Image 1 (cartoon, rainbow over the protein chains, first blue to last red):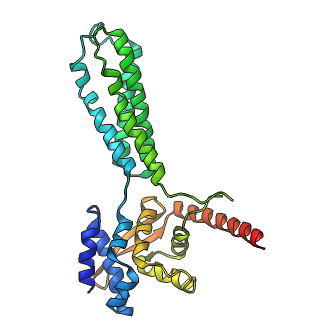
Image 2 (image 1 turned 90 degrees about the horizontal axis):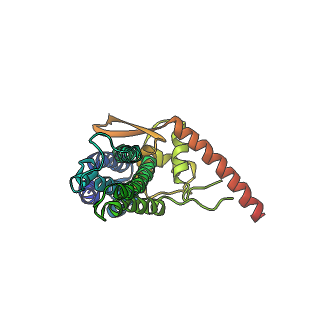
Image 3 (image 1 turned 135 degrees about the horizontal axis):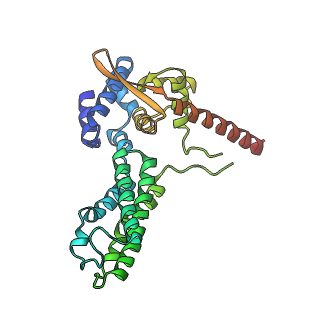
Amino acid sequence: MIERYLEELERRLPRRGRRRILAELEDHLRSSAELHGEEEAIRRFGPPEEVARGFRRRNFGRIALAAAVATMLPAFYGLPENHLPPATWPEGQMPFGLEWKRDAVYVLAALATAAILSGRSRVTMLGLASAAAASALAVILGIEWADTVPGTPAWLAPAGLVPGLLALGGLVSYRATAPRKQARA
Amino acid sequence: MELDRTPLDGMLLAVLDEAPLHGYAVIERIRKRSAGGFDLLEGTVYPALHRLERAGLLHATWTTADGRRRKTYALTRKGRAALDRRRTDWQAYARAVRAVLA
């Protein structure tokens, strides 16, 4: 009976960490069955769909953060520069106003990437903020680039908005799904 | 003062403040100390334990007992601080409710 229950549960658990979760819950069920019998142990434990639901974490914040970082990847590989008109400055002598913004976008994007890899909720929040800041700077950079380099395509500045919108969406959904507190007393 | 929507997290931390325990023992301890007042659906406690572990409030170790793998939880220093805050908040909440209901 416990074997059948565990099979039912396994089908419903998220893939990540499934074997360890099952090992832990099997230990519980068998300990309980020693005292109460298998049927009662399962009844006390709860329906498999209800137990499995608790393990499914909908972390839209991390999904949004990953999407925001992914949309910044073309910048890492210099794709925008391959489609831009030639710069008006000699190679290696980018105007400082453009250079620091470009470097700051890279640093903020790297921080956002590190936040994804950390797996911790609070760090995800910082990562989302970092991605949003990178996006805002990218838009400003795009506008200033267009002012400096004639013929710059119109899509450059608005393209910088994409990761920021994803990050802001992630922040909103993260706050919406975070456990709520009762009113202050 | 801010309160959790359910008191489960605080109860889990409080029980583990006494000694490291595995999940089944935690649930039985809560049931006994509450004199049956909290008769939890046992399987739903484990997501809460995992969440507290991810938050750094609990530390878990694996051992082998009766030929089975067993996960035992212990309170971390951060968990102890969180428990102290929850105790303070609940005492203030209880005082406030008693004052209104009296």
